[in-house]
Picture 1: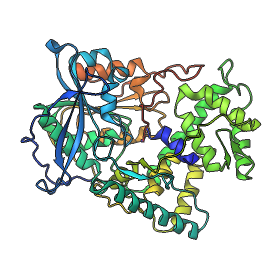
Picture 2: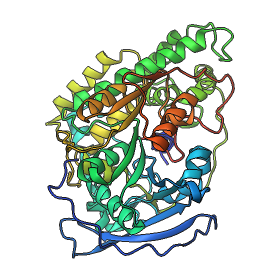
Picture 3: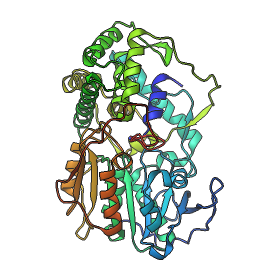
Length: 497
């Protein structure tokens, strides 16, 4: 796997609506069986239309899992969750639910997860190994043209390997799948916890089926009303720069447990960036590749986004400065194909018009102004430039939010310094939802429920009692650990958007 692909495998943590939701009331009940990995969890499937506009046409099978409430006498109902990605496997995460959700939620709710269409047990999207999973940073119009051609050819191979699900993996379709799951469970209403890319699913479900929502938590929000590429890119670049500045301040402090403590971390990074521009750096993890400035910025964006990795980030920058010998890496033979649903999902949900190479150059220059130190946002570039030239129809493009009267109060949660889903996205979305409340975590995190007792308590209280925090409420930042990452590092297993 190419180095950027490895980086994104760590991250890969991160539409417009059809006019009338199709009814799911006639969905037959799920035939449950013990899951092979854990007999205390039930596994099953729900059949849904491949194309919800043609409900009598071809069908897909959606893999579902349920962990029943530990205290059935006090059961409140069903909590359906999605941990984002796009591409996180919900069946696996249901089995791992005790690592994700509090004992109180496990006692009072049936926890239900599912593999979204195109993922794992639900007709997975597969692609050739070693393909262009990340867009490059072309220096000329011809390089840009060649990059688009490679991406287009990659999509054609993915379609051949995956079948028709490749062209029907948009989130508006998944929202209808969720309502089919609700009907198959026999529930009149459901509670939902949606993280990261899952917030788009939760937003669309609430717009389509507000009367089916008992409670909805949206944590780490995407803004599906943004239409200009620069707005999306700039928000991520600014927030990544702020997160890096917080890391640098922490690392400079004494005693912080950081290898660069007291050494002007920002200056060290600037020196490394200059060496990367001259082609003088190699990554200790990937010694065969000359490190580019974009690669260095991508590594910084990843580490800075996770405070439990800040100590390791200091070690990494030290090794990079000293060009330390590479760490051992596995030598396993790569497979011929790999699961890669990201593009089939994201580029079906977001349309980012870039007219030509000159406009790409203008976007790149704007990023340097927004983030003069990092100069880049790998996650933003992937999501905007990575959708150019795709052989994918944007079936679910951005548009204005339309929440209907009667939508129940919704809780939004967002970190102040989340580069993957910037806080300003959550502010915009919260203003579009009647009676919504935004709870802000005043630190750096993506999955605040995993790291902040304050956030966890507020989310649990809302799901259990429907009691929302006061408007404008916030939770303090949790102190940064000095040692390496613990069991909850602020990212869901399987990544983020």
